[in-house]
Image (cartoon, rainbow, N blue to C red; front, side):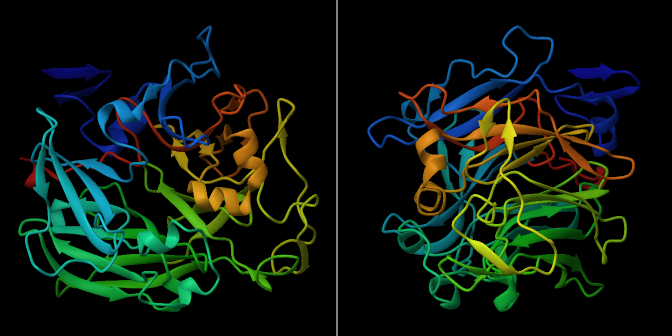
Length: 419
């Protein structure tokens, strides 16, 4: 059925273009948040969060849904395919060894139909993915061996190429075969979240590499192959009182605004969220930065003795009287780009290792108000979702989604590739 709003007309749900969604999309009213329970004897949750300022339950968690009822827990990346399938990236096999593939689910029956890759050659590791049919490509990233990273972080693990990935994997969208692997080298270890620009004919995207806090731009060349170049590097801080002499930022999430103007990412160890103007695709420009926790606060046991960016360690952050334990991790941007939501959980074993107080008290969700004209972000001191307010159900909040689609899950098709 055609949908109309203002001057836009589409067939079926969604919006005809990223610009259409940005200009005509409604303000978000609820967010779905997948949450891991801190009590191993209790089920994980899918929480519905009220983010409508006009609602009587604003800033409250509505009735959570137990994930285990549906046979899933701690899910990762899912995208809807134009073929009618739901695709979910997988990081390994049932034994906990690494392999990159994708589970396919029929969107009508919700029955598993098999795996996506049709060739014997598969990615060595798995994690996130994005597809772009216009360029006949699906790009997939790499974390590491599940049996290893589930134990927690060890400083020696990222150096082992058999344990942690450092490659981008390019598949043919039509043939479902692995076509090209780009080894990013040591500074590209653990390329996690990947984003194409939203303009559906664009052949440019960005990937955040966690271990050494680098962002790479990838692009399709005239001969049909792909290339990747480092465009952002967050300097490590020389520290005392930590597990190594230098602490990287650890980029764990990135996203791109619907107008392809801004790139945002979180540094889960340093504790800041950054906003870059990417109008010049090869030279991102830092225009906004804000600390929301992390490992280098003034009340931490870590002392920073050399810092290329900051003159002094940041102070703890409080919102509505609640100290923000942990560190900024997952990000979600409003369609119009003016509100950035942030949650604080990365992965339960790592949360316990780096931010024990965060696990004890539970996650939070905060909101940053964004200047989309000039760049810049400010904490909304009147907005806080506390996932630890009920001490009988202390939750670790992770990924966020809007019911009608958002800039981290919606993929637009060019007219030439619409099915």
